[in-house]
Image (spheres, rainbow, N blue to C red):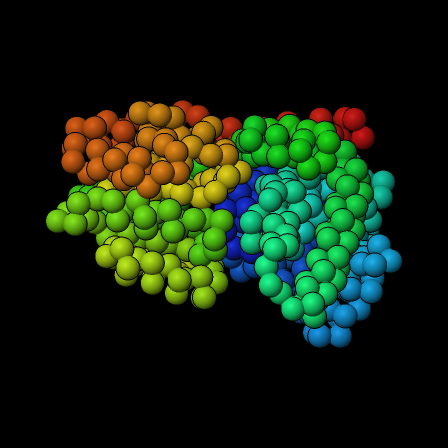
Length: 413
């Protein structure tokens, strides 16, 4: 197949998944060309050996004060905002390149700004397959401090001018969000086939768009995450970008529940983050006397070393759609303690490759303590985790599933 690959991804799990897909397809003889934007992290993806240099179109999502005022007026008229308009232009440019490339298929991937990509509506006369890591959660979930925040208390003593400002701000934000949902539904309808990474993600797609998708599980490259059989050190590891939905606060509170005399450090590895939020987490750790160590943008070698020397991976992300980290840890022989939410319930099996608990810090701490104090249990989970990854989560099987879905779309197209 001659495949056009489109993405607008930052560094992280979705980029690792796409790298594996491109590498696996290229090794099977398929021809691939990558189309992307200037805001994507093409250096992190680094697939030049398999697909050549990416074809990049310019994209700027910076908003100035005048754009915000323009977007308010646009929202009242139910028109698209500045960032959508810029993405539409970038996707039109990429689509022109794709349609001139002699491809058999468009393989679209998630967009870091909108999740549901706009490229599908502009590529004509090609079968279109989308691998969506997750819907735009801020548009469909009740994030308490984000777009669908609770309304202010009507009984407070606000000044009238403050109330008027909050009223109109709420109107603008909700109108803009509804326009974005409308545009997302148009994008969703533009693809012939939608793939997701877990059954949980499929349920999220049904809730967001009204219809489901096919589950196409990802895989773990054991060559990238080898088991090195190194002595374990007394520290707990966390993985995830330094943002609230990755919930490092839960991990800090859990470690704080362990006895002070043998409380391990919490080493948190993240590829990006919000500096203000990181400072808040350090302050929380200080108040709870937890040794919270942050490592940002570590190399692959450093990550593998940490996974091979930590005593436990404490995974606390909120409603994670799939989560590479627990399986990557298992590949390195590291047992996992995870919050039983989202797609993690499909990758972590209770008392096989780790423990699943509620988000209660005391329950998480009890599970961590069992692993830290029972060497035989730790060894059993380590061996079973490596077997679990090797048997069920290999790269070849993941590429098999994707290739099968592509051939199906081509036949139907």
